[in-house]
Length: 311
Image 1 (cartoon, one colour):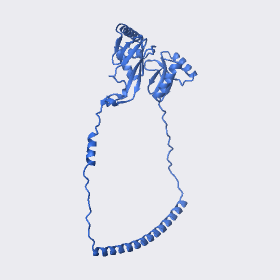
Image 2 (tube, one colour):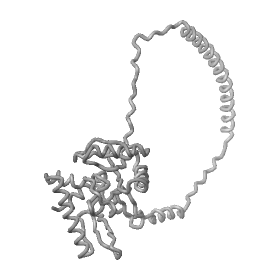
Image 3 (tube, helix red, strand yellow):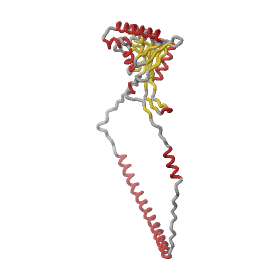
Image 4 (cartoon, helix red, strand yellow):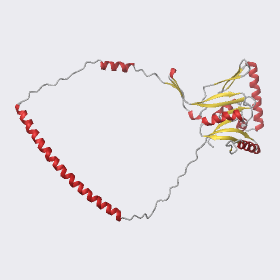
C-alpha cells in the first residue's frame, strides 16, 4: 500500500501528521512575501518541517487510511509499519529517499535525518489558485528627462500695453466714486432696519414656541419593544492537543490530570475516527497557541501538537 498520498492529503487539513515509528511532518503558515532582488511576489503558504522525535501513534494517519481503503484499523497500522520498514531500508542502502509531493529525506554524517521540503505544492487551502509572479521594475528616467526639458524651456513674458489717460475718464471716475459712496451709506441704513425687524420677529416666535412646549403633554400609545442584543461568543480556532484516545476512560484521566495541573483543559466530541481528543486549551491567535504549545512540550508533554479547527 502506498501511504505517501494519504500523508499529503492530511497535510492540507492538519498541522501535524505523525508516521508511527518514523517521525512527524509539521506545518507552519508563512505570510505572503516579496523578494526585492528578484521583484517577485509569493502568496501565503504552509512551510513543512520534520521532527524525528514524534513517533507515537496518534491514530490520525491509520484511521484516515482505514476509511479511505475501507479496511480495518489494525490492517492500516500494519501497512504503515511495512512502509516505514522499507523507508528505513532505503535510507540504509541509498542514504536518501523521496516522499511524493512532500519532500526528500536523507542521512547526514552523524546518521541523523535531514528533511528538504518540496516547494511545488502549497498545502494552505486559503491560498488555492494563487501563484507567484514577477513584477517589472518601474523606470523613472523618461519622466525625469521630460521634467528637465520643461524646466529648461524658454520663459514667455507678457508686458501690458500702457493706455493714455484722458480728462474725460478722470471726470467719469469721480462721478462713479460719488455714486458708490452714496449707495453704500444708504444700503447700510437699509440693512440695519431689516436686521432690527428680523430680531423682533424671531423673539416673538421663540416666546410662542416656549409657551406651546410648557402647555403640551406627550403620551406614547404604542411604545417600541425592548431591543435584545445577542453577543456572539468569540471563536477560538487554535487548540493544543494532548492526545486522541480510543478509550473514553483514558481521555477522562488525562482531562482530570490537566485540570488539576491548572490547564484550561477541554474534552471535545469524538472525531470521525471514533477517537476522544483532549485539549490543553484553546486560543484565538496562532501566536498564542504556538507559544503555549512550546511551553507544554518543554514542561509536560513533548508530543503535544497544534490543531487548527473552529470548534
